Length: 448
Image (cartoon, rainbow, N blue to C red; front, top):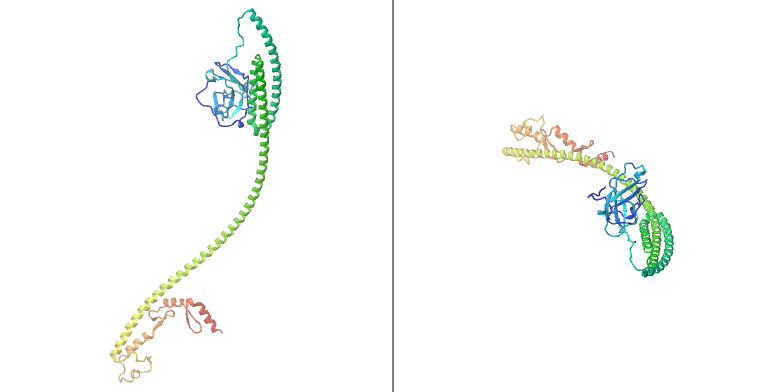
């Protein structure tokens, strides 16, 4: 499979959220010779299903996110995931795309979501050491070299013994490290990052041990350096133990905080229940207020309807009053005209209208009996008799006391007038309709 121009799917997911045990890398060398292709062998576990956009990248040791890859290759999807051959896969990196420095790198399997599913042990890209050297010298030099060689062999044996001791110490350290790894496995949720650091440190120790084996033929001063290195490793292990203790202490603190949060949650639930009960009471109060508001609206509507009826009656009364007022004014004008006409006639007869007493005519009196001062009677007696009924036929409004002629005071006007006043059935006294209480008290007084 060749590398394409398309960038692989990455993410900013940290090491704590990765799963390094789902893809296992096999046959990873300690170092690869530059200039040659590198084949990466890996195995898919039974719980992992590869996808089309999965890829394998070469990362420098110490990377933080999957965006820090040096180069990558797309993985090939197996035809049948159930077969054993489908679990064993490989991918080849071309020499042109490989790193040119001697830093430590590792293979990482990344799925199409940008999450790391597996990582290999660290390795380097460096040439092999040339151990065979041809030397030309004399016989004396050879003997001297042999003597020196014996001394070197003796020193080499001492170095081997020291190396065995160091290997034993390293084995003890590896056993202790394995024990620490098991303890860290139980604290995966809080110490995955420390586990990765310990694994990387373990690989560094193995690389350092390989370097010590290759430098086993050097002088004793190198042995002292190796001892110093072992002391440094022990110091680092002690530091890691302290870090692990801190992690355990942090886990206990988080547990205490969780208990406090649970207590606060219980208190909040009690408060919420109390608030819900208060809310129900408020809802009942609001419902009662709504019912009272509906009743008040009904009463208001009834009062509005009653007010509208009263307003309508008042308007009709105002119209009747205006009609009667206009009729009163018209009759007053006619009365004034009649008075002026009577005054004119009386002036014509030489009588004063104010000094003339009015006498109702009787049927058994003649013309001389009507006015004994005249021999032939009053020539205008017919006029007075004809005008007297008009003066006697004036009717009064019981409300405003205005006068009306009989011909104007028809039945409809009388009916409307009676609706505006109240007549006593005993003494025929008239009361306005608005003085109903006074009318009832007056009628009650007749029963005493």
